[in-house]
Length: 405
Image (cartoon, rainbow, N blue to C red; front, side):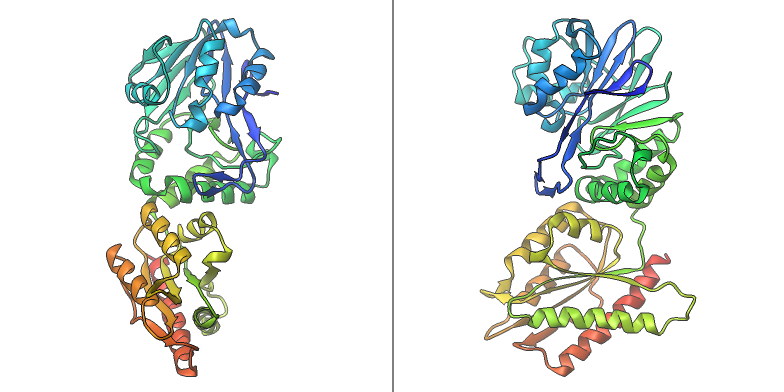
């Protein structure tokens, strides 16, 4: 299977409908591993696919050209979902030279025996002439690996953007205008939140470079190819990378016998109270309340990306927070979201621990603590629930302020 992007430029990748986990990313819609074939006086393959699908990639190439006519294989990224098929591909393309930067070569050598491969190391100022077309290269270190780069085809205004601007979806569609734009941006946001978030500063530098290019197509390594909604995805990346906030409160909690759950509901109720006090023409503060054992790390991170204020709650188990809450906070810490204002809450029985552990976590990640910890011994009393509702009102007001920054 192949799809034409422009004359003699084709998608030849693979749609993986069955993958459901990508190092803890919940790929509920599957994924695509996008590879692209450019046929000119010389032929170049841009990236490969995950190892189990090497045969599929080779078949797609055969449908467009003889394998012996492929002159170059460009490796933009050494991660296994991009490069896993390389040993098989290089063995089946007898005339091909691998094109990559020096860091990529070293990373590939740590995974594969590359001693028999012809390799051309390129620098950012280098180009690769294919005949009527020329490829140029831009290193984008830490978006999202040290060796990451993108490939640009100025003749056709196509950016082969590596992981940038991707989404994890399996689909028979190939282009953004074949899907609902809101759905695509939602999946792109999830992808950004869970994979790219820690590298926002580097993303902003990359966006400066990208905006200097003539762009008719952005062809990422995963998901749909951008040709109609390029301004929309560039604008979204600008917002996400710069840490733009929405007027929103996130309530994340884990509960044992629903005491902490009742407290979470009361915080949410306070947000409704705040919205009810606003003028009719004022936009309300949004809220999301997630029981972390009934959600996924992927959704939680996506919801937290542009949320400025968080209420984090846990029951107490063995003098600690609940295990899944600890997992969530570990995941959030690694993603290095922009600073969020936080509140710790939760319940305990014969001994404290859960909310105190969350308070320590807030201090560890240097999130400003906006109110005293709210604790309930066993079932929350009416007084405790009113504390929670008042906290919700205060958090909503703060979220509105931070979104206006």
